[in-house]
Length: 208
Image (cartoon, rainbow, N blue to C red; front, top):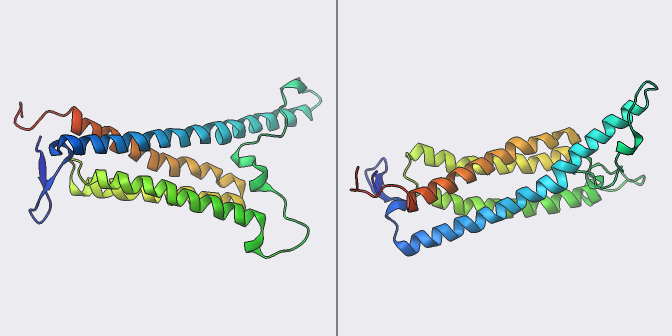
């Protein structure tokens, strides 16, 4: 494996494999810190959004079945309406106030704006760092370009989903899966690839 690659203009570009030891340690620490943050975010989504959402769907199906006299559903299986997931969040599906007010002054708009701008800054910062690391992967220029750009597209899909499910229909909740899956999958690939190139890949000149 070559420790350096050339761009289309023939300029030599270093790869992670020939970084100095302090540089490798720095990149590794940045990667591990971001990975912990991503795992924490994933855990929060699973525990506070996805699991309660599916529990609420199950409870709704049981409640529907109980309206059928022939149903043998156990009323004790129906869970309380509180602690709903993101799809059924009271904040996301709250009824419009009886009194009319400007769209940009509504609680829904303020809540959505607050959380989307926080996510845009936070998640995009992760992929700014990840993109910088991707530039030094031992991959083709085209592959690195896709790995740099696609996570930002996934983040935009994820952020757009928050607005769509708030102001169009809660069913847009499901767009979180392709959006989050896109940037999460690329983050995982870049992380594993970078660690492998720095610490496990065969060294140049040793058996190539």
